[in-house]
Figure 1 (cartoon, rainbow, N blue to C red):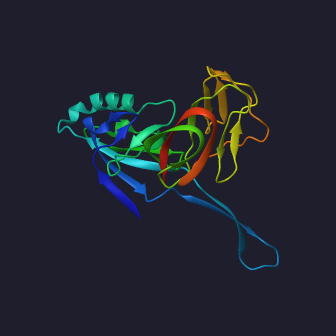
Figure 2 (figure 1 turned 60 degrees about the horizontal axis):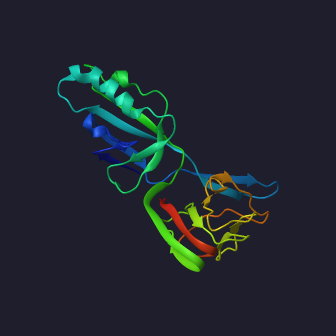
Figure 3 (figure 1 turned 45 degrees about the vertical axis):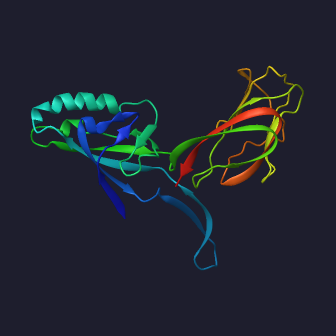
Length: 241
């Protein structure tokens, strides 16, 4: 089952409806790639794993202008709006508070917008199968504190911390026991930045080592964290199925 919408599509901050009308045909959710294994001497298959895959999202477009002589101008302007070197936010009309990360894939056939055929299809490839929603932030002090990740999929934190002087600065997930701990001393003038998605820690802009038992983690739902010292700003974006 697919949902079709004809309305504004915003890509990489550009409203495509300024040039064309859009009709989006998309699946309810990303495809599920399930792996099974046959076992000799047994009926059926054994389940091994499942994960969400990337997918193509076709968008039908046609000229807003009744004068099809505008086609060449639209082609050039639209090409400029669609051109990116990496996936960019794609906001669909029925869900304006969330976005996908997408990039135009394959032949665009913009040349099909001609006097004879004023419409064509642009295909976006969505590699990350989840939607991104509101940006959230929490200011934390040393000790235990609770957060609510929001969304319904795990999210990755970025942390900017101002620790107290000493060694063994860390942030810990009290629900799972996972933590990220510096393997160096810091001072009150130090600024520690942790990117859980990139699994990267810096101190005052320089790469910093972490202990061997460190484990970068995601947040999911309501959970408790612990900050060893000082204060920290935690930021993340909600992720949705």
